Image (tube, rainbow, N blue to C red):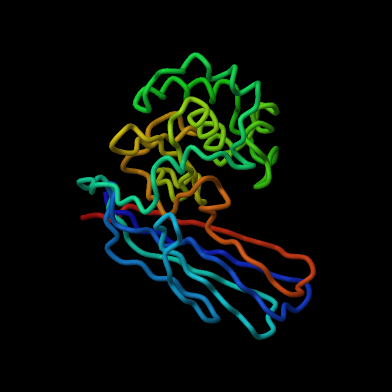
Length: 259
Protein backbone atom coordinates (compact mmCIF):
# COMPACT_ATOMS: atom_id res chain seq x y z
CA UNK A 1 0.00 0.00 0.00
CA UNK A 2 1.40 3.41 -0.99
CA UNK A 3 0.30 6.29 1.22
CA UNK A 4 0.44 10.04 0.67
CA UNK A 5 0.95 11.91 3.94
CA UNK A 6 0.67 15.61 4.77
CA UNK A 7 1.45 16.75 8.31
CA UNK A 8 1.11 20.41 9.33
CA UNK A 9 2.18 21.69 12.75
CA UNK A 10 1.48 25.35 13.55
CA UNK A 11 2.54 27.31 16.64
CA UNK A 12 1.06 30.74 17.37
CA UNK A 13 2.11 33.05 20.20
CA UNK A 14 0.36 36.04 21.74
CA UNK A 15 3.70 37.82 22.18
CA UNK A 16 6.76 37.94 19.92
CA UNK A 17 9.29 35.12 20.22
CA UNK A 18 12.89 36.27 19.91
CA UNK A 19 14.52 32.85 19.41
CA UNK A 20 13.29 29.29 18.81
CA UNK A 21 15.08 25.94 18.67
CA UNK A 22 12.96 22.93 17.73
CA UNK A 23 13.94 19.27 17.46
CA UNK A 24 11.92 17.64 14.65
CA UNK A 25 11.25 13.92 14.32
CA UNK A 26 9.08 14.12 11.24
CA UNK A 27 11.01 12.13 8.62
CA UNK A 28 10.33 8.40 8.10
CA UNK A 29 13.03 6.06 6.82
CA UNK A 30 12.99 2.97 4.64
CA UNK A 31 13.23 -0.34 6.46
CA UNK A 32 11.21 -2.62 8.75
CA UNK A 33 8.57 -3.19 6.08
CA UNK A 34 8.29 0.28 4.55
CA UNK A 35 9.92 2.22 1.70
CA UNK A 36 10.03 6.01 1.58
CA UNK A 37 9.63 7.09 -2.06
CA UNK A 38 9.85 10.81 -1.39
CA UNK A 39 9.69 13.11 1.62
CA UNK A 40 9.91 16.87 2.08
CA UNK A 41 10.17 19.06 5.16
CA UNK A 42 9.37 22.78 4.82
CA UNK A 43 9.51 25.57 7.39
CA UNK A 44 11.08 28.97 7.92
CA UNK A 45 14.44 29.25 9.65
CA UNK A 46 17.59 27.13 9.41
CA UNK A 47 17.30 23.32 9.38
CA UNK A 48 20.12 20.85 9.88
CA UNK A 49 19.77 17.07 9.65
CA UNK A 50 21.35 14.44 11.90
CA UNK A 51 20.71 11.00 13.35
CA UNK A 52 20.05 10.60 17.04
CA UNK A 53 21.42 7.79 19.21
CA UNK A 54 18.45 5.55 18.28
CA UNK A 55 19.09 5.92 14.54
CA UNK A 56 16.14 8.25 13.89
CA UNK A 57 16.58 10.85 11.16
CA UNK A 58 16.00 14.16 12.94
CA UNK A 59 16.27 17.86 12.14
CA UNK A 60 17.14 20.84 14.28
CA UNK A 61 15.22 24.02 13.44
CA UNK A 62 16.73 27.35 14.51
CA UNK A 63 14.71 30.53 14.07
CA UNK A 64 16.79 33.42 15.47
CA UNK A 65 14.65 36.40 14.42
CA UNK A 66 11.42 37.67 15.99
CA UNK A 67 8.28 35.77 15.06
CA UNK A 68 4.71 35.18 16.23
CA UNK A 69 4.09 31.96 14.32
CA UNK A 70 5.90 28.85 13.12
CA UNK A 71 4.55 26.43 10.51
CA UNK A 72 6.22 23.07 9.91
CA UNK A 73 4.98 21.08 6.93
CA UNK A 74 6.07 17.49 6.27
CA UNK A 75 4.80 15.55 3.27
CA UNK A 76 5.62 12.64 1.03
CA UNK A 77 4.85 9.09 -0.07
CA UNK A 78 5.61 5.91 1.82
CA UNK A 79 4.93 2.35 0.68
CA UNK A 80 4.09 -0.22 3.34
CA UNK A 81 3.94 -4.03 3.36
CA UNK A 82 7.40 -4.21 1.77
CA UNK A 83 9.85 -7.01 2.42
CA UNK A 84 11.24 -6.16 5.86
CA UNK A 85 14.92 -5.31 6.04
CA UNK A 86 16.96 -6.62 8.98
CA UNK A 87 16.87 -4.28 11.95
CA UNK A 88 19.88 -1.95 11.89
CA UNK A 89 20.34 -1.42 15.59
CA UNK A 90 22.59 1.44 16.66
CA UNK A 91 22.39 0.49 20.34
CA UNK A 92 22.39 -2.82 22.26
CA UNK A 93 18.80 -4.06 22.41
CA UNK A 94 19.13 -4.38 26.21
CA UNK A 95 18.99 -0.56 26.34
CA UNK A 96 15.25 -0.95 25.83
CA UNK A 97 14.94 -2.69 29.19
CA UNK A 98 15.83 0.61 30.85
CA UNK A 99 12.99 2.24 32.72
CA UNK A 100 12.08 5.92 32.39
CA UNK A 101 9.83 8.26 34.33
CA UNK A 102 7.01 7.75 31.82
CA UNK A 103 7.36 3.95 31.74
CA UNK A 104 8.16 3.22 35.40
CA UNK A 105 6.49 0.07 36.69
CA UNK A 106 4.18 0.16 39.71
CA UNK A 107 3.04 -2.63 42.07
CA UNK A 108 -0.38 -2.47 40.43
CA UNK A 109 1.14 -2.98 36.96
CA UNK A 110 3.43 -5.77 38.19
CA UNK A 111 0.42 -7.67 39.50
CA UNK A 112 -1.55 -6.94 36.30
CA UNK A 113 1.02 -8.40 33.89
CA UNK A 114 2.38 -11.15 36.15
CA UNK A 115 0.47 -13.91 34.35
CA UNK A 116 2.57 -13.24 31.23
CA UNK A 117 5.89 -13.88 32.93
CA UNK A 118 7.94 -16.41 30.97
CA UNK A 119 6.16 -15.74 27.69
CA UNK A 120 7.89 -14.43 24.57
CA UNK A 121 7.33 -11.15 22.77
CA UNK A 122 5.35 -13.00 20.10
CA UNK A 123 2.83 -13.98 22.79
CA UNK A 124 1.93 -10.48 23.98
CA UNK A 125 -1.37 -10.27 22.06
CA UNK A 126 -3.22 -11.22 25.23
CA UNK A 127 -1.49 -8.42 27.12
CA UNK A 128 -2.73 -5.97 24.49
CA UNK A 129 -6.30 -7.22 24.98
CA UNK A 130 -6.01 -6.96 28.77
CA UNK A 131 -4.65 -3.39 28.62
CA UNK A 132 -7.55 -2.27 26.43
CA UNK A 133 -10.02 -3.91 28.82
CA UNK A 134 -8.56 -1.95 31.74
CA UNK A 135 -7.64 1.36 30.06
CA UNK A 136 -10.26 2.83 27.73
CA UNK A 137 -9.32 5.15 24.88
CA UNK A 138 -10.52 8.55 26.12
CA UNK A 139 -9.16 11.93 25.05
CA UNK A 140 -8.50 14.72 27.54
CA UNK A 141 -7.90 12.51 30.57
CA UNK A 142 -4.11 12.46 30.25
CA UNK A 143 -1.34 14.60 28.75
CA UNK A 144 2.24 14.15 27.57
CA UNK A 145 3.49 14.14 31.18
CA UNK A 146 1.22 11.27 32.30
CA UNK A 147 3.09 8.14 33.34
CA UNK A 148 2.12 4.56 32.53
CA UNK A 149 1.25 3.93 36.17
CA UNK A 150 -0.98 7.02 36.37
CA UNK A 151 -2.83 6.23 33.14
CA UNK A 152 -3.36 2.65 34.30
CA UNK A 153 -4.71 3.91 37.63
CA UNK A 154 -7.07 6.33 35.86
CA UNK A 155 -8.32 3.55 33.61
CA UNK A 156 -8.30 5.85 30.58
CA UNK A 157 -5.86 7.41 28.15
CA UNK A 158 -4.79 7.69 24.53
CA UNK A 159 -2.35 5.89 22.26
CA UNK A 160 0.79 7.16 23.99
CA UNK A 161 -0.55 5.96 27.35
CA UNK A 162 -1.40 2.52 25.96
CA UNK A 163 2.10 2.29 24.48
CA UNK A 164 3.74 3.33 27.76
CA UNK A 165 1.72 0.78 29.75
CA UNK A 166 2.60 -1.99 27.30
CA UNK A 167 6.29 -1.01 27.40
CA UNK A 168 6.34 -0.87 31.20
CA UNK A 169 4.81 -4.36 31.38
CA UNK A 170 7.20 -5.83 28.79
CA UNK A 171 10.27 -4.45 30.53
CA UNK A 172 9.00 -5.78 33.85
CA UNK A 173 8.75 -9.20 32.17
CA UNK A 174 12.32 -8.96 30.87
CA UNK A 175 11.31 -8.16 27.28
CA UNK A 176 13.02 -5.15 25.66
CA UNK A 177 10.38 -2.75 24.37
CA UNK A 178 10.39 0.66 22.72
CA UNK A 179 8.00 3.48 21.90
CA UNK A 180 7.19 4.16 18.22
CA UNK A 181 5.70 7.34 16.76
CA UNK A 182 4.28 7.59 13.27
CA UNK A 183 1.07 7.62 11.28
CA UNK A 184 -1.99 5.40 10.97
CA UNK A 185 -4.08 5.16 7.79
CA UNK A 186 -7.83 4.69 8.17
CA UNK A 187 -10.21 4.34 5.22
CA UNK A 188 -12.75 6.77 6.72
CA UNK A 189 -10.14 9.46 7.38
CA UNK A 190 -10.54 9.30 11.15
CA UNK A 191 -7.58 9.57 13.54
CA UNK A 192 -5.96 12.24 11.36
CA UNK A 193 -3.08 12.86 13.72
CA UNK A 194 0.20 11.36 14.79
CA UNK A 195 -0.10 7.88 16.25
CA UNK A 196 1.90 5.80 18.72
CA UNK A 197 2.48 2.09 19.24
CA UNK A 198 5.23 -0.15 20.63
CA UNK A 199 7.84 -2.70 19.56
CA UNK A 200 8.75 -5.76 21.64
CA UNK A 201 12.00 -7.66 21.00
CA UNK A 202 11.57 -11.32 20.11
CA UNK A 203 15.18 -12.48 20.18
CA UNK A 204 16.14 -11.54 16.62
CA UNK A 205 13.50 -9.03 15.49
CA UNK A 206 10.94 -6.51 16.65
CA UNK A 207 7.25 -7.38 16.92
CA UNK A 208 5.01 -4.30 16.70
CA UNK A 209 1.80 -3.85 18.71
CA UNK A 210 -0.78 -1.10 18.23
CA UNK A 211 -2.40 -1.36 21.64
CA UNK A 212 -5.03 1.36 21.08
CA UNK A 213 -6.44 -0.58 18.11
CA UNK A 214 -5.98 -4.01 19.65
CA UNK A 215 -3.81 -5.36 16.86
CA UNK A 216 -0.28 -5.83 15.64
CA UNK A 217 1.04 -2.94 13.61
CA UNK A 218 1.00 -3.78 9.89
CA UNK A 219 0.55 -2.16 6.48
CA UNK A 220 -1.60 0.76 7.65
CA UNK A 221 1.16 2.05 9.93
CA UNK A 222 4.04 4.32 8.91
CA UNK A 223 6.83 4.52 11.48
CA UNK A 224 8.80 7.73 11.90
CA UNK A 225 10.80 7.52 15.14
CA UNK A 226 11.37 5.31 18.16
CA UNK A 227 12.94 5.56 21.59
CA UNK A 228 12.57 4.63 25.24
CA UNK A 229 9.34 6.63 25.56
CA UNK A 230 7.34 9.53 24.14
CA UNK A 231 10.03 12.09 24.92
CA UNK A 232 12.53 10.28 22.68
CA UNK A 233 10.16 9.99 19.72
CA UNK A 234 7.70 12.90 19.83
CA UNK A 235 7.30 14.74 16.49
CA UNK A 236 8.30 18.23 17.72
CA UNK A 237 10.00 19.41 20.90
CA UNK A 238 12.04 22.47 21.70
CA UNK A 239 12.58 25.70 23.57
CA UNK A 240 11.86 29.35 22.87
CA UNK A 241 12.64 32.76 24.32
CA UNK A 242 9.54 34.87 24.87
CA UNK A 243 6.20 34.29 23.19
CA UNK A 244 3.83 34.35 26.15
CA UNK A 245 0.98 31.91 25.70
CA UNK A 246 1.29 29.29 22.95
CA UNK A 247 -1.40 27.79 20.75
CA UNK A 248 -0.49 24.63 18.85
CA UNK A 249 -2.44 23.10 15.98
CA UNK A 250 -1.48 19.81 14.31
CA UNK A 251 -3.29 18.21 11.38
CA UNK A 252 -2.51 15.06 9.41
CA UNK A 253 -4.03 13.96 6.11
CA UNK A 254 -3.33 10.46 4.80
CA UNK A 255 -4.65 9.03 1.54
CA UNK A 256 -3.97 5.89 -0.44
CA UNK A 257 -2.16 6.39 -3.72
CA UNK A 258 -3.79 4.38 -6.49
CA UNK A 259 -1.23 2.36 -8.45
